Amino acid sequence: MDKFVIKILIFFIFTSLPISAYSLSVKNVRVSQEGKLIVINYDLDEAAMVDLSISINHGTYSFLYNHKSGGKRSKSITGDVGYVKAGKDREIIWEVLKDYETFIYDDVRFLISPNSLYSGNKSIILANYGFSLAPQHSFGIMVGQVYKQAGWYLGLRSNYTFPKNTSELVAIDGGHIPTTTGDITPFYSGKYKNSHLVVNVGTIWDILNTASRNHYRKSLCGLYAGIGYGQRIQWWELQNAAFVQSKDNSVKGFSSELGIIGAYKGFTLSFGVNAINFKYLDLSFGVGWTIAHKNR
Image (cartoon, rainbow, N blue to C red; front, top):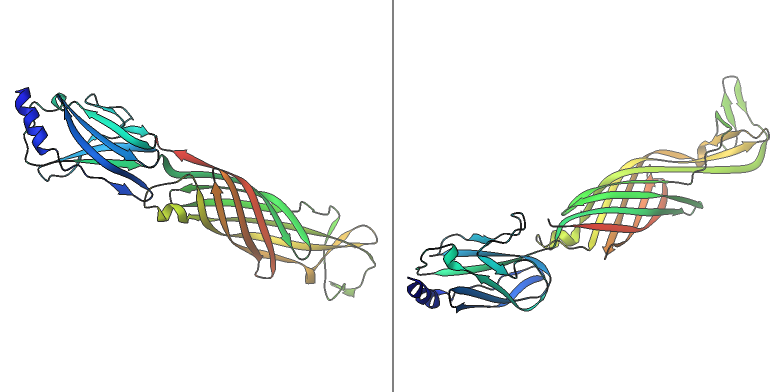
């Protein structure tokens, strides 16, 4: 029986197909018979998780080896499946008679499928710096998570300046303070402080992974957009060391943000523009790290 099976295999194993994906491909596929073994050789241009499937008599493909099934090798499949480094003459060996008592078919096709080493999920953490022409400097943090093509982020920045002796009084029209008994113009020391705070939540869109058609990469190239709350308040100091808010030089309320973010080998940079009530604008710069999660 073995000789008969081997003869049929030699005759029909000619339809193995080279399979390519976005920037990840298998080339130069060759199939040969060595005794009772089927040997499949191929070239791989990038390290990948490699699966092997078979189609018999024009039927649908079914796995001979699937890296997602616990990452275990089939007893009948050995060689370069699962995690495979890039290179030429990668080799898969199939002991076909462990899976079939006889193997007599008119058409046999093999499919070698390279899969990305990465799941597409990424964790992001950045230290942020903000600057406006006020001038105003702020510092903070941005954290986020991308799930394949899209995800979320949370950002916070502040100059951490909040005067202690603040009053509920608000100065308008260059220094007048309205009260229930009429406007007053107090004596100012000429000193002032600015307090700045912005908190945004939003979405990150990974353009690179969207374009890669499920071949997820460690790198990141995307956009982020968010909304939240922001304030930039200018406090004028009175001669008694108390501070009153200058309404004409303060803004608080709706915050919106738009920016770009990119990561290469983990190192990550971002640049964005933030607006509070579309009146107060500042630029933000971020530097940090992105962790790309691998396939399990």
